[in-house]
Image (cartoon, rainbow, N blue to C red; front, side, top):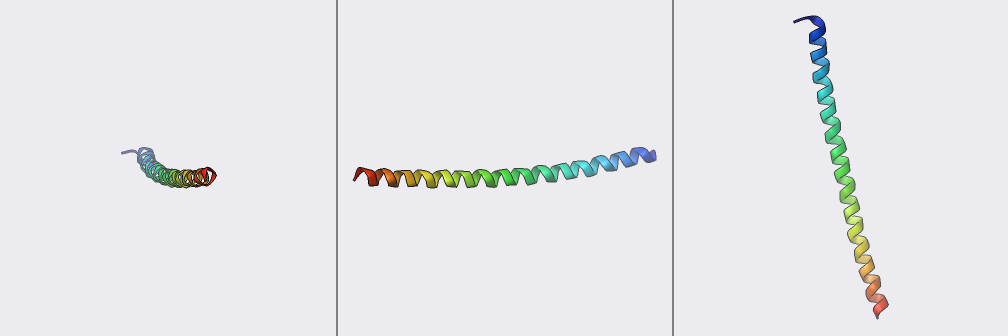
Length: 57
């Protein structure tokens, strides 16, 4: 194999690994953010129901 071809192949492998790590990191951050948003939405709905029942009394 030519030297430049080996260097290109190694660079491609390294970039693929880094790209995979970045995708996993972004996915986990997005999942955490959506979980947070879901919990806040559920809590808000519970608060709205409490206020509705207080207003009806």
